[in-house]
Length: 103
Image (cartoon, rainbow, N blue to C red; front, top):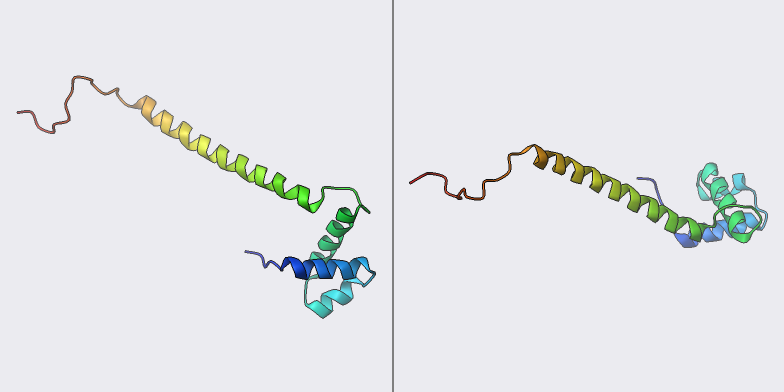
């Protein structure tokens, strides 16, 4: 599982980058990967309106919807498999009993 930074830490780093500090200097100082900082800066620029793209608060519901769709598709797959099993079975005899042995 990837490491997750706190929201406050990320916000303060983004403010520093938007103020003009270099990404490489911050990466060395904070011991955070430069690729991570570049992604954060890009998203911060989108959030303040300097770049086009989905804002961070808009992307979260979209990710939730995609997860929900994935879960529903997996559930549908299970239901179809169960339905196929029941279709192959012999229908139960309505006059048959639940006894194991005939008396």
